[in-house]
Amino acid sequence: MSCDLSVEIAGLRFKNPILTASGTFGYGLEFAEWLDLNRLGGICTKGLSLEPLPGNPPPRIVETHGGMLNAIGLQNIGVRAFIAEKLPRLRQFRTHIIVNVFGSSFDEYLQVIRLLDEAEGIAAYELNISCPNVTAGGMEFGTDPDQAARLTEACKRIARRPIFVKLSPNAGDIVRVARAVEAAGADALSAINTILGLSIDIYTRRPRLATGMGGLSGPALKPIALRMVYQIATAVRIPVIGVGGITTVEDALEFLIAGATAVQIGTANYADPLISIKILEGLEHFLTQQGIATVRSLIGSLRMEPCLTRSETRA
Image 1: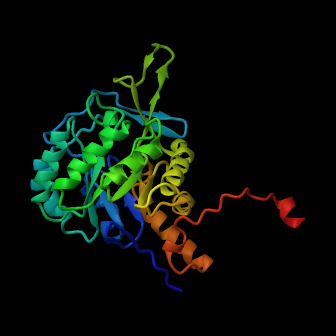
Image 2 (image 1 turned 30 degrees about the vertical axis):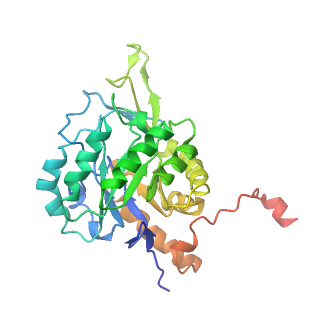
Image 3 (image 1 turned 180 degrees about the vertical axis):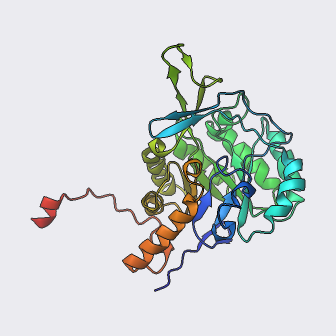
């Protein structure tokens, strides 16, 4: 039995729902020697700013129980260098390239999108309004529904490609933000970004990260991300892309069942560069084994009634 893994987001047909998450997969090209990028549903690039950024000083990554804290600070080569140096090579691959965009002001977001709009080989933009480890912009847009909506509307007005908005779990009410950016014209949502965290060196009594706090990612984030994806997916009509602590095919399946149309693999790429392909193969095996013809039938299929214990089931 052959199964159909394709999904649709904002009018784009993805060959499968397995994407890579921004900030964990470089510009995509770095992984080309490890795996066949053509097999992926899509690649979300490292976040791009108007001008190159050096990022934060080290140390900027700390391993934690079940995950890691990062304060990379959105280091990147800048949008012009990306268009000139990276995009021509990315166009060779038969997968959707989703460019993550950020800025410290509305105008910077718009300038980046204007430059990208002139380039070919891009499927969509992912607005990073939710990064917790930069000092300007970033999270302040993502935690304020009105600001998030205004930014989304401004970007949507000029962009010639779909706009995905990456939501912050640090918002007081992430569902309210989701509804606000949907009303402002967002074509899809990515949920969630990292949660602000802290790690302390007990001998120096100082933070382990040079910036003090950073974004928590990895398996420890998954139950929170899964809960938020479910809440968002039941509150909006646009597609949701699930992100947060996915390391196995079972994790990916949970997000799909909770309502995600696709998933992004993030921190797990550091431990295993082949993890996205392994999850893709596991998904295909699961569907075949279960006699499920299309992955789309799983999306949003969660039943929230309490699970029965084995003894209750036998009774």
